[in-house]
Image 1 (cartoon, one colour):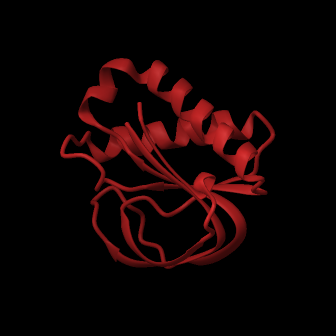
Image 2 (cartoon, one colour; image 1 turned 180 degrees about the horizontal axis):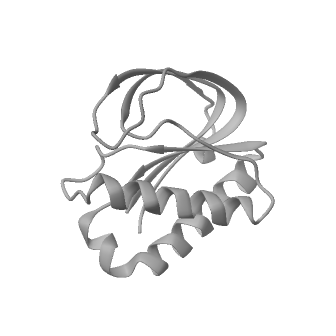
Image 3 (cartoon, one colour; image 1 turned 45 degrees about the vertical axis):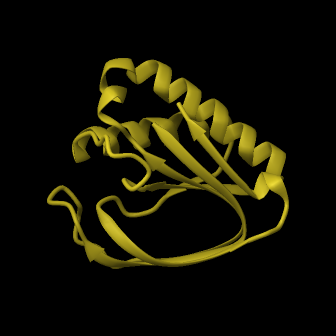
Length: 136
């Protein structure tokens, strides 16, 4: 798994193009302020180490939200950080499990619509914590 995390001063997105057969038909637009965003790339090898990957992802994402002082976390499936890719079904399941585990720790979590390319605006500050990459 690869995580690209940003602490955003503001983040806006809207659904643009559906790119997966398992995606629901949806048109959505949201805006957030003071939010941590985790772009999540689930890799093929994550299928064999699911529990470890979920645990480490939750640890890294909750660390980032605490360090950044954000009020919310947005999880976005982003299959552009590695050449290794899992199935859309597994990626969606894993992201939902990560979301559930983070929510159980008391954080407010949103996921962007799975299986869509998004149009988005991302305003990131200049501190080092405002952009973090992790390979799990």
